[in-house]
Image (cartoon, rainbow, N blue to C red; front, side, top):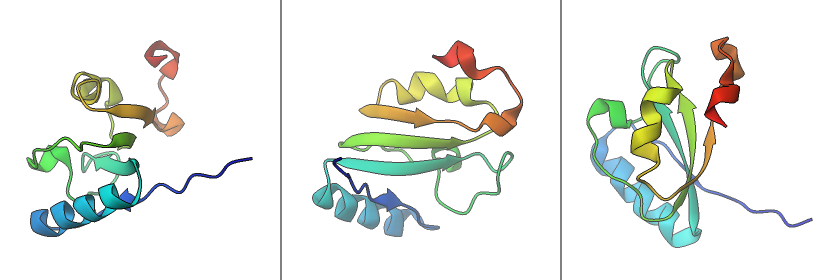
Length: 98
């Protein structure tokens, strides 16, 4: 079985986040990003909700730590997103996202 190590990018400040993103993109053709809305979980990293504009250039696994994951799909479908991870704790029937 092949194992792929995917770097995750977290930072509290925009400049540090951009530096870490560039470093991660040099390591692997895929990266992992946690997107937090400050409601479902407290925000402990820069997020798109905070106004940081990007998309990454590499294939991206996105962990949606948000209360309304469907609201994020239009944005994520414009990125090179390869996987979207959502929380079943939301209590909603998530099958409609498939």
